[in-house]
Image (cartoon, rainbow, N blue to C red):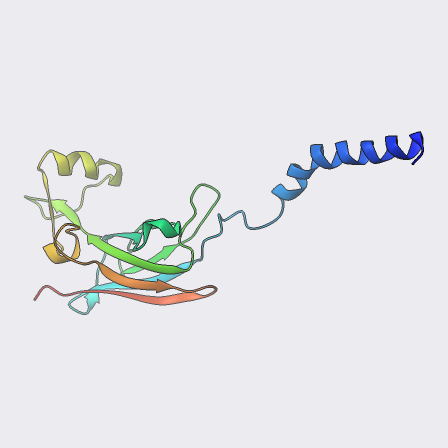
Length: 160
């Protein structure tokens, strides 16, 4: 190789090393690689509104993500990955269900950001039966997230 060819090859290598990460940053999904998962949550067959659903992988080693969502008035929920969270990749997840309400008024806190502080202060009670949220003594509800479309996932809670 001539000196000119070596310089040209060297310049291409420098550009590839310098610009490679910028070019790769545009590749792939900005969603963190998880799947969009939608569904409904019910309690005794009725929509479960204002509930918190916590999705955690059953095999932690798998590194398939997880999520926490809140149901709307019809019990609908949606997990959407984004640049700040991975969301849920294909695999099996355990689901824990919570619905924290004021002990006296039986209404949820006005500000969702206050839930943890009010819960720790003993001002809130979980309206969901123990077996659906206790991680120590009960297995979680299990769902399977598949590659691609994951619509209509049902989370069913029974009080009896």
